[in-house]
Image (cartoon, rainbow, N blue to C red; front, top):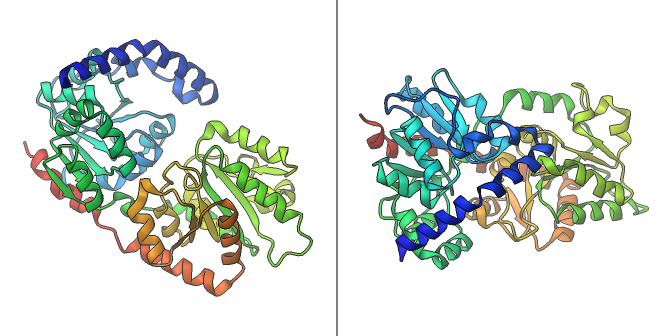
Length: 431
């Protein structure tokens, strides 16, 4: 049954390749990065054929995983200065961020489509000696082909929510062989480890969350100090479709109030860049004026008459979340007000920005619970409550100061995952 399911899955993936090409062509019209080197996704490369098995393959699908990989790469290079990395991604934002992690001798390509012929071409071309998959990236064909050629594959900084576990168990004949094909899983938490064990993973350890080890961009923090203004700023960070309209509606209602205890700036940063224009139109449709980050000079919004008069600021840039968090006095957590599992709140805490989160944080369950327990975050039932809670927080300086200090303490209190992960990887790195 397991072999049959894998064959059926592989057939579906093979048949869907024309659909993928069309999807990439459409996506490339909004984000040109998706139109770059499309042949790589199907196992055709311009890079020279590797003659020796020396590359360590690190797969970081998107922007978040790529940034999370940075502290691990730093430790690996510290101990193995000559290490060559094969870095793969699935998204344009991940690939763009990954360029900053490359050194001479490294290779960067798209993730191979999970079809047997494609994966075989990828493995034959680059001949990696070890594969490291970030967080959730378990692909049945890729793992089956890696096992066939005796390539060790590890899932690092691994997380598995109850929802994802339930989905995997429903397809157990496909998912169990994939997970059991991993050479090891380095889980973020004990709860994650116990869920992986239910899928047949036997070589398990807990190494913590690499996101706590991510360094903030000093240039962005310096810019935030230059741009910081006296009036408070409320941020909606990494918002998702369906959430922005609720947030903007709250702003509209607030603007209509005749008396206000506090008058903050509002900053909205959508999770996906292809939706920047859509979100700007949502705001205008509610009668709210918008100023976009891309229109500001290096002097920031204070130097823009449009920005200072706008009802909403739109963060339409990539790689600047640290700037936005450092500018904000408090933030609403995107992906947590719709049933999407929430986004990473650790970067906000490291910037001393307290978080108000909705009910859906299953992607980062333990971090969300820890942040709430120490006063770095608070949980609400919906956007109406979230907006009110954030406004109350920024209206009370002492409470806001206490929450900011708690945020910094939370971010500093769980570091060290990169070292623990490296220690677990050492047996696989020795020649």
